Image (cartoon, rainbow, N blue to C red; front, side, top):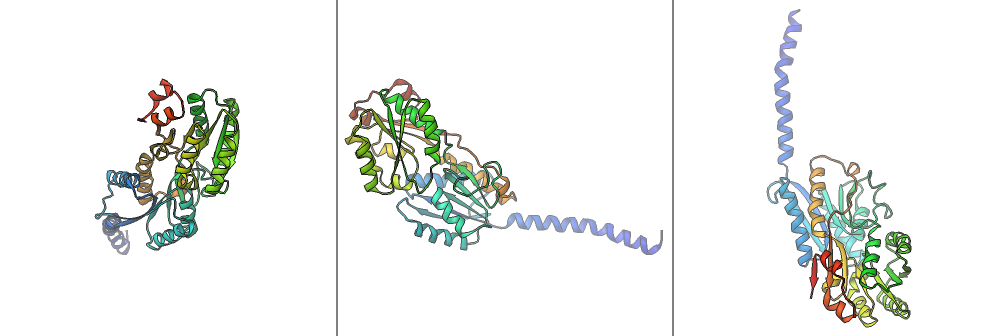
Length: 332
């Protein structure tokens, strides 16, 4: 071997551990960098705080500690806040240049998506991510969004079956929905209602006046009940819906526990606190280098049934033991 070649070989060999140490130092420095997570969720009450706490606990279990290696900027909105306010808050959070964004609900996800097509977004409690245009498909989202669905379409069958169980004479069910948001639940309910020998009545509403007019009209015929899927318009007017159901003696099944604690008959809902705990796993994976496009949309895994016995008694309904046994919470 020539002398020049020998010197080059020795020099290169000496450089190898130096290069390796430099790469290790670079990775360590990147790992120590404080990451930033922006969060936009609904309600700042006890339920909202519980969901936020579950998300933070999920991150901590995966090694992300607030004040040490992650900064979390959280903003709360209520269902009463309109789209303009959602856009303003979304723009504010995107301007912070976070590494990843966590956002709850279909309207807020839409607002966030308008503000960025590059920052990774993990959504929670979105009804129809494909139909809403957020992802290309459930197994392969593509783009910068992934997350957790609120319900699968088949949940409408569960809601209808609960109505039939508590009111065996039920023949008709009004699906109260906002046509401007999604027809996701309506499409599934149309098929599932036939299998239960229930006539499904599509009841489109966009305001309190629509809700009152629609329910009053539906209640003129006997043996009916209400199905109330997720929508901010319905949540904002839940006291009106509950009052109309009581006045017209209509059994009703709701998509969220808050309707039942406010006096509604019963609900079948996902465990939304647990969903935020699950969302922490996707945020963790993205912070560690995974891309949202490669993370499949998750379906819910935990559900909760809540029954209000006081309301059932006022409606003259006997709650079947089978329903009481399945209930996670019974309000008396």
